[in-house]
Amino acid sequence: SQILEKQDYDCKKFSYIGNAQHTPPIWFVKTDSPFHTVKQFNIYGKPVRHSAFSLTSNSTVAAMIMANREGFPLVIVGGYKSAADAILGVIRGEVEFSSCAPSVAMQFMRSGQLRPILAIDQKRTPDFPDTPAIVEVGHPDLGVLATDYWFMAPPRVPKDRIQILENALMKTLKDPGFLAWAKGAGVEIVPLNGEEMTKMVFKLFGLLEQYKGDIEKHTK
Image (cartoon, rainbow, N blue to C red; front, top):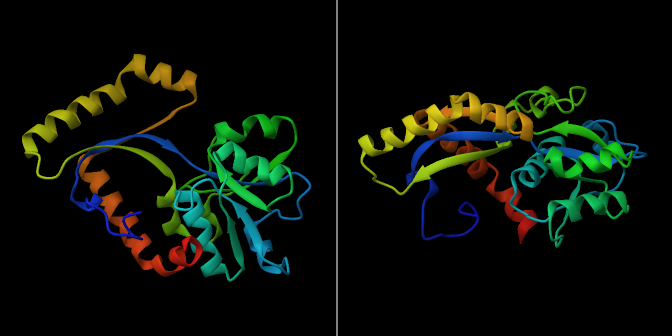
């Protein structure tokens, strides 16, 4: 939202402590959909509809940028109350595709109602090893649009205090008991320290600022 309208804060000025969890959004189509790859959106012959509960979620923004780069007409259908509702829009035939975390769609995958076609990530996800990552289809910079869970503090927190918090976070993310819990819960732990997290944030903002016009076209 900071890219699209003035806010009372600047995310680039926060003090970043680190990253803990990583969840790649997956693009899903209905099982009997004619689409097997994103490249096929170009030959559909009419606008491709994407259901969304948030017009500025990472995976929805990825669709906006992809439409610009690949040259296919995209319509974002908003108003859904949750990611699960947006996925039901695919199953009901209201849209051609949608995106969500694997956990949201798994029940519909098991029942044979959905099929994954793309992972918004730097690599393929273990849940869908046959589904290409976005970096494999010609868009390596869009892997940064995977959903990550950041730890941050207000701007100008003294560096020594941030370091204490970062050390505690990194220790927790390596704790055997915590890792055992994460594995059982299906949570992918991706530790990043404060410096690595800061670089990722600035890379993400650079991408969003570059495509601000395309995002605005679909959100206004």
